[in-house]
Length: 204
Image 1 (cartoon, rainbow, N blue to C red):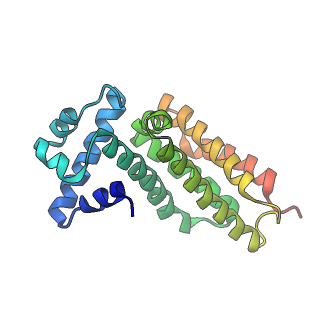
Image 2: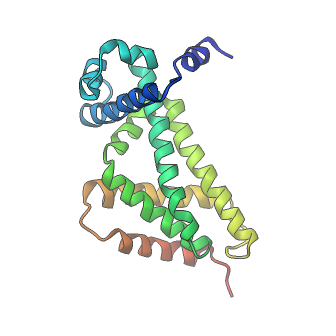
């Protein structure tokens, strides 16, 4: 284990109260970085928003870079969990992708700061930026393969399809989740899902 990894492990909350404080700091960091960006955002701004002392910050995070890295991973996990809750309602593999996009649109509308944070991660912490997209695409690819095994999708679906669908979802979330949230997300998801259905659904 590296020294940096060991330091991060040592800062893992050991009590429910500690986890609440860490969670408050992450929420405050999302607001701080979402509003000001990484470079203009500050630790003092985060602690002020979280309503906790500066010392509490260093109990859980080593630096501004450290909390930013943790925030990217946390937001990625929030998206994953938000989508996962809805997927059991899917009728089949095609419908799962409609629900996945719909869930993401809803998440993006509630957490518009995610785009600025993830975009900045490309330059602030490229490893975290890459991990966000690679893990998302990996989950989608696994979901598509399982649907293909059930006979719901074409046999040739693979990682390329997952990245293509994810790319479409990312820009639809930007357009209809962040820039303009007036259009019915159900309609947006249905239109995009028709592209998926016509592209990779098993042909009769």
